[in-house]
Length: 124
Image (cartoon, rainbow, N blue to C red; front, side):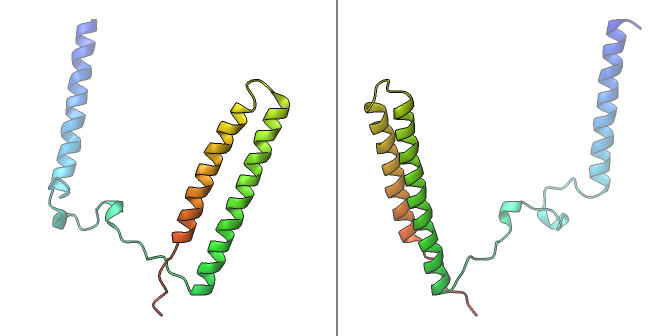
């Protein structure tokens, strides 16, 4: 077979496969765009999730854990900044100060978000 014949045969095979898939979709009823025709299909984002709820004690315990984790993370970041400073004094303390400013900005933002954490009480 020449190259042109092989190319043409490949195109024909692809078209036959596409028509077969289209026929399968049409005859199984999945061709329609109407959602009522396919009740088992839908977007995962359209599904509802159960609402996050907790009692007051659990809410405060979770918030306290968030604050502890934030404090530990900031402490580890500060230790990391000083460790880098000790290893590489190039352009220090400006580099450490830049890292500290970024870490403090993130810490303050995360702490504010933890203060706003307020899931509703469970209904029952």
